[in-house]
Structures are given as structure tokens and as C-alpha cells.
Length: 215
Image 1 (spheres, helix red, strand yellow):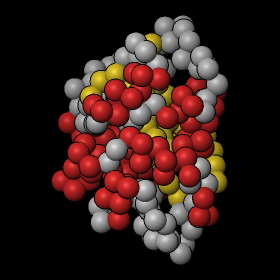
Image 2 (spheres, one colour):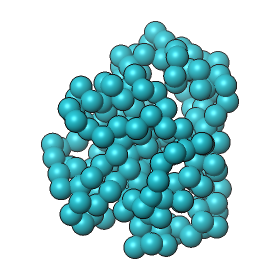
Image 3 (cartoon, helix red, strand yellow):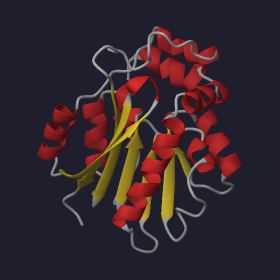
């Protein structure tokens, strides 16, 4: 993760500003529904370990149906401990781990893992290598797809709320589906399903479901 992005996520951006922005552009809602659909589709067995990487503040719990993790053993990770504290307020007792996917201390196996937009902020290949080491049966990614006239992750015409203005100069890197598929193929993961969800500014939250080598 570039220093500027690391500083933004760990020291600059507040939970309130982050949630305000994500809700305003529809990404919080779209990505939460992506997670819910993914879990319903793969039908994890009872007590399965499920990782939500880059879980942030737990904003998803304001959108998804209650109880989507019932009977499972979820683990929520994020690089920002303050964001995870917000998640714990929403879901008391939720197992949260402050973790950096580039230099992760997470240990598998997990039945499934989901990473929503977090890879755009780090060396995404290292992040995928980390996830592959967890011996996943299923992997779910959400990446952002832009219309041709928008080259940056954050739309140039948008005024970002408060501390989110850090991303006007510290730009996340958009990922390209062919490169993601090629890298995951080398790690033993094959694309199983693709689900686009449109959001503001003509962008798409592209959900990619993969089958791993350890079903």
C-alpha cells in the first residue's frame, strides 16, 4: 500500500465521512447486497469460517438482511482499528482483526473470503496471494468498473465529504478484470460467476465469484 493511501486509511479518514460518501454514491448498498448474495449462493456449511477482508466500519450491517452470518464463524478484518471499533458497536462481540492484506497475520483455512474494493488500495497481487494462502473453497471480490470518460477511482466532479478529500490526491488504483483473472488462475482459482451492480456516475460494482482448489 502506498504511504499516502496507508496514511489516509489509518490516520486521516473518519468513519463518518467514509460512510457518508459510500452511501451517497450507492456503493455501500450495492456492495452489502453483493456480500449477502454471495453467501446465499455458496451455502456455507454450519460453523464455516468466513472472512470479510476490509470490512471497515460494518456499514454493510445497515443494509443486509439480519442474520446473514447466523451459524457461521465470521472474521472481520481491516487495516484501521478505529473502523473496526465502529463495527463492534453495530455487532457487539463480532470477531474483528486489525490486519494488512499485504503483510497479513491471518491463518487459514477459511471456507470462503470476500474482499470488497480493498484491493484497489494496496498491491492487489500481494493481497490476492494472501487470500489464496487461506485455503479457500470460495473467493469473492468486488472491483470497480468505470465508464470510459472516468479514469480515476473517485469521480473528478464529486466533492468529497470532509476527510475523504484525502483521496483527491491519494488515488486508489482501479483493477482490470483480465489481469485479476489471470493472476488468480495461477493461484488455482477459477471464475464461477460475475455479477455487475450499477452505482452512481455510470460506474459498476463488479462482483466476481471464484472457486478455489480446496472445496
